[in-house]
Image (cartoon, rainbow, N blue to C red; front, side):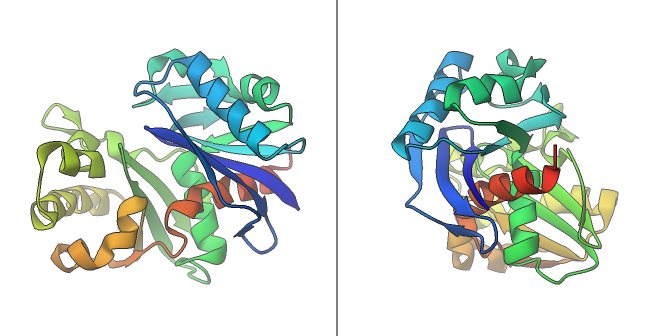
Length: 246
């Protein structure tokens, strides 16, 4: 099946057509920058631009950085509260001209890694983490997803822990890779206390630079970089559309 996958991040919308049987992008991904927080009209325009770029008329799966309950957008973090309590499927369907379905962005990335990437064949507990503007999380057990796990919003010193340990914090504060990794270790300690994963998969753009900071990471679980890197969110959004069966 061919689905247009769109991965919505805190700084950009990224999309490409995906072959859901192979997990391959069928064209070079197209990126549209957005503001943070993102006005609703700007975000819908970004999705529209991606669909038009590929002249797309078919199904559209979107990985959205927030809690998704059916077609409705629930709690939203960095993208902005203006997105909350809206029918996201209807909004993005009108914007793209296709039948749209929304899913939590980290859940989507996790689905891709579990089927085609670093989690393939792993039957134990797996925690997928995406480090970017915030920290996305997806939890799997025996290959099954527990949706809408938001470990990035665990309170830490009065704020969500992603404001202490996200990849954006490293850039904003000018932290060295080691300094930032020590913050990530704090996050690992909290997350492992809650779910005790056997495998932690690290995604997001920083997964391409694992040689710079993985040597400083400490956790009980085995830690590996995502094999699909930044494409996991796009591929996963397409997979989620196919698997949802709605």
